[in-house]
Image 1 (cartoon, rainbow, N blue to C red):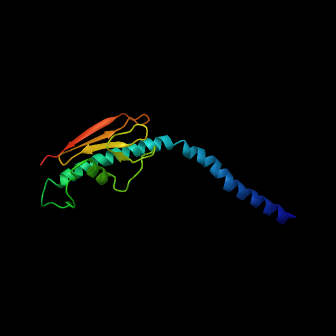
Image 2: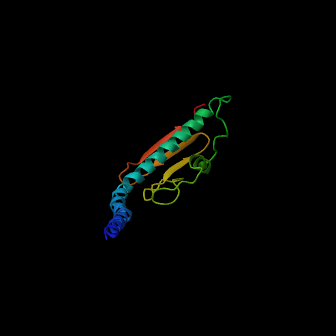
Image 3: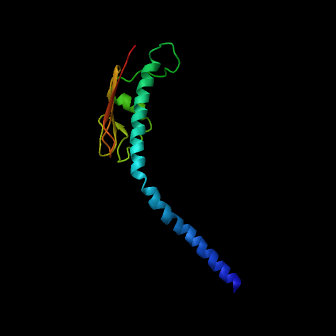
Length: 137
């Protein structure tokens, strides 16, 4: 009898652990999703600026290390350089494209071999921002 009672309590504890813990954690985790999506958009924006600046900096010294490929000649070249793995925006679609999209959180990038313009959309409560990076030989 005592063994059955312990077995029943163990089963009950296991069920509480399996179903109770996720029931508490999922709502807590899901409440942070909007904040994480804004962080993802802002991080992608900062990455795009960093990649453009570093690409131009590496090409200032023709004999310097780090020159693996030429500077992109067009917008699609910059998009592929900044987002080579095809990351997705929080709202769906590509994380980096030629135009910023405030509905999805897509970062806008346009440029050629002499200038790159990076635009952050007004996604959720982020302020729209534009940075222009120029090639200075």
